[in-house]
Length: 514
Image (cartoon, rainbow, N blue to C red; front, side):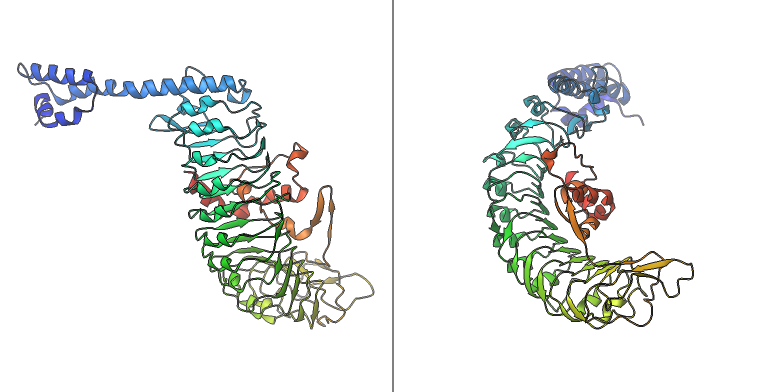
């Protein structure tokens, strides 16, 4: 039986109590008409639905006006040609809407040269603002304090300068902030540690000439911390407080003028997946707890002053890459490394390691690179090395110096390919009498280590393999080297060519930014 309008109003008028007064008048009018006739339910819908859309259309029009004003204040960049008065802003490529209201703006790589207008915060539902990879000048835009719902802020790869404000915590809802590759200077303010919702903090590649605050250790929700390539930091130790970051997945601290020892509190970073403290001045032993972090996949401690033995007990069974090269490590190569079935890269060169190379390393099924040259090793390379994995690079000074550099055909190659065997300089290491039985017929280069100068500093080959531009690469964005202000070395740019390495990290950030 068709429901009548009178029945609908009598039973459900409670649904209309929040409507504007015009709707209440309509309801009373229909109730009066019901005394005369029974109108079908759909008549009410036909009349009321268009009226309900009016507030949404009005909101969309208001936001379009704001955005067109914003476009004008940004100098009407050609990249925003789609912004016009005849279409809905929700249809513009750079705009994302939720329930017909603007919530996200992405103006990345739009060649913007103007400062950020305060108008942008007139968009009251704005949660995400991405202005990365532009030419925006000036100090940190305090006008963004008025964006009360802002959660994601990306100002990376611009020309911002001066200090980060002491009251930056006024953008209290921030979950993600990337200020990397700018010219910010001074100290990183303690106020950063009061952004209690923060999950991603990226401040890499700036001109900070002060300190970073221990208050960062209070960010209990933090998952990614990127402070790398800030070589002008005042020399400082890693705060013990950082060991409280129980949710931290990535710690990127390359070339940040770190001194002292790696805190034992790092043993508590149970969620840690990537630890990069490379190219600093760290001393002392590697904390044994580092090799008990169950989720750790990448460990980069190369180019420091670490000493002592590598911990013998290795329980980090998910490790994919280990680079402890260019330190002062002594003792033997741990037998437990052979348990790392996911290991692809093992680099221990330029240390003071001694003893024989464990045969178990030759059984690692995924090993692609094995670098142990410039140590005091003895014995022979494990005979299984290359049999069980697609080995591509070996540098272990595998035998006594030979009279000439000769090409040796790999055992079982069968395809006429040759392997370049360039012997190293460990005179106490004896080579196996037989050719190395490499499983794959790929070209294998067995070389002594090399590192050389590029136009911006020392380059070592081991750095080419990693996309350790965590905050940038994880978001899948390229990096332009249009100005020396970035001081981005050739190495850093090369890393961006292999973004697939960081798919998992990108998934994490994508989840956070939704």
